[in-house]
Length: 434
Image 1 (tube, one colour):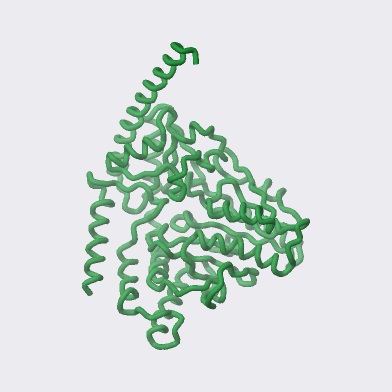
Image 2 (cartoon, rainbow, N blue to C red; image 1 turned 180 degrees about the vertical axis):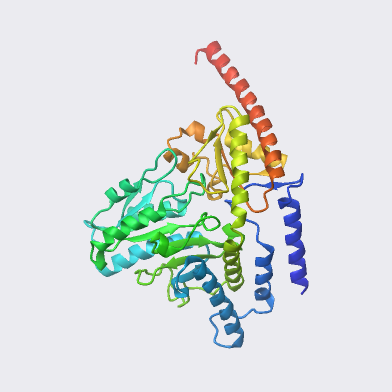
């Protein structure tokens, strides 16, 4: 079809111009989003025009779409090692995280009432994504839940003993991200799951603690089998693993009491109202099925990440790696460059043809210091000198070589400008005594 030909050509153009490591652009912001895999796009195309039925309709057209939705559900379930009916589709990770956290709390409040002297208790960490932090803060503000925000160590890792100590008699939910979107730190999810299981074995079923994990950054690189990890709820977003934007998934272990957070139809087992995004769901299913097939690429990505980290720390004086050197995602590196403002580094690199970020894409318009780096103990002035560099399957060794050379020049230039400004400031202070 004419539309398909046009879209295919567009995808090829984007890939060639931005992903090939050419002089035009080198993309190093894979934590923000990934380019859609061409095979994923091919799987989606029929459901835009040809297989256009509403997956909730009972007739032939609708059932053709429904079969595609259920195939994708099975692909997600196989990846997670769970039953297909334990997977529901959403618009993305933000909705999945909201549904997981609010759904558990609303269910408890609906069943037992809002007793302000014994609110349901949530434990999360200070370095979660804003959609988790804001959800928990709003529940606390509206007196629907009590929330404990756990600190992390200087590498950004939650202390399991501290988490265990924070558990109360009325704790019903623990929400800890698998891997951080800014610094790539991997949390001890399996260990936390095991501790929660031990505690639950000593509790009555009505007082069970449920374990939610935001696995958005982890899906590409880490084992997400839910039984192995001891997880009850797990959130995903398609565009983080070479799938489409605007579609996500939430794993819900059978028996987890969850209330819907939006009213409407009975789609997704009555938990998520709204017309199925069939093309997006098909694309997400195909993308997750390809994750395991492409795991061999992880070793190469990690090798390039290590080359990047070693090159920066060796060749740029007074540079610092933020987060854990060992317990981090294979594609993530976050640096601070005291004396050079991070936003300026990012913009200068963009002009030089390199796409990086200063942290979470969702917070890119926020001039406040990163809440993640602040939680690690970095002062605000150092936090503002940081950039995040994230690699992907289209990153080459030549890309890293070019980036290292460009970054060194950018940081040196910005530090020299900063030094001049500091001298001018000191002169004004000396001259006017202020």
